[in-house]
Length: 328
Image (tube, rainbow, N blue to C red; front, side, top):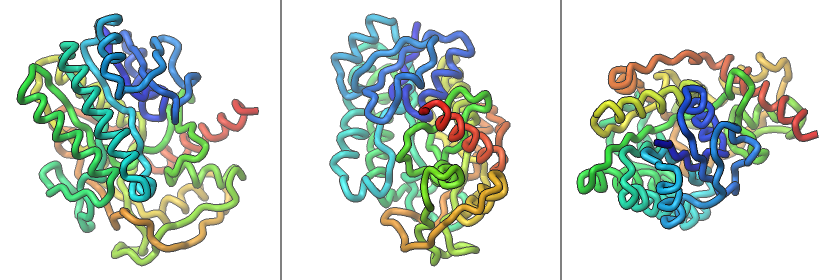
């Protein structure tokens, strides 16, 4: 039996493919390569070009490879873009996920893991959230992800499908072995952008908002190393395989860093005094989003191994330097 990874040519998906292949799993990747890269797919996986929204294609793949589980990463993720172009997000995230879930049900898939987001919580104040915190997404991005959570819960109540939802906080860093990382040149992730500035690929970076109700006035986020995040996926998959109930879990360390703190850490790690211009707030950005991470630890026995901001920055920076060599 095989695991289908949608969006497996992208940042987080490619790390999932590595982790599954490392433990001897049969892996199939489905990606339309709009934001992903075929070279990012580990050679031990089978790659299929196409859209996760194509129900008939997914059904063909389920039959062709004997797919019993789906890990769904494919989608659009930029909050400001979702505010400017909401229909794109309801198409790429909500509607596409609906079609993929239909294929899973029709094809007899047993387990489904979905990449959700901390954006489902909205404005939460400075206290860390828990899974029971009221949901009030501020952006179409967050709403599009929450709609998929609802669809999964309703589908699992009506069909023999168990699922896991992982609500990501700010994912950053790269594979410590240098095999994968965030490769999209125009990505908006704070740590990636700061590393690109340090390497001279961008002239400067922007700090969006300095008047938030936080200690230094800039947004606070819970940054999680991508390798730790993927470890949670692997544990969740085993949880479902062993008969565990469907569950929704926050993936976070329980500690937040402000934008200014991240910028200073990048300066310290790289030795470059990067330029960071201060500007107005962006639409849809809460002042702070952090989580306790207690439930994912208790449910899955998850133990972070890379929960150090300097390490996160160092691996991200190493990957950016690798990309500069690779793209020559």
